[in-house]
Image 1 (spheres, rainbow, N blue to C red):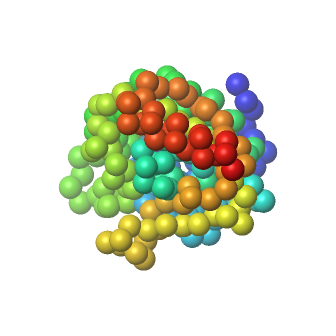
Image 2 (image 1 turned 90 degrees about the horizontal axis):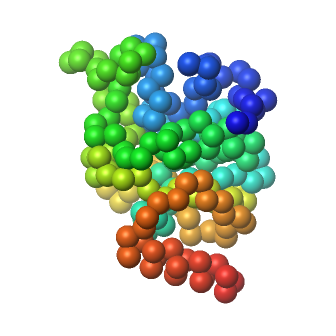
Image 3 (image 1 turned 180 degrees about the vertical axis):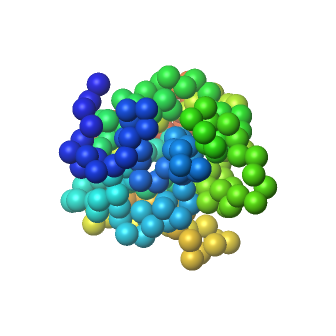
Length: 203
């Protein structure tokens, strides 16, 4: 296991783990795996690392699934090369501990991670986990980390909300690819990844 990166020394801990900058903090507890929408937008716009909150350097990593390749963008803020190994070690979705996506979004109202029951709480509007419904209960995806040069960092938005960043473009030169966790791909996903690999190898 990788030690806590020096860049993250200022970050709060929960259960001995670094609380990423973009993680939703609800009722004083970290809802690991749930993105805070406001912080996510800030990270996109200001080119901040999603883990340590520091500005990105010359190179950064994007987390990529086959579905992201199809859409042409990574839906999460980028990471420093130094923050990626620690994240890959401790995130259940990246290290293979979690075999399926959770069936419903978890908003932590206490350490057990029970769903929020306060109807006046604004927390649902502060989450950026809009893809959860589509993934609910399904097997975990293959995850890769793609290194890009920060000069090629391009924020993209949904057509219906052009003012709000929704991801980082994957249609840029990729310097390095690292498989974080494997998964059985559907025939369509495998075809898509084969096409991308052939384009990369031919360039």
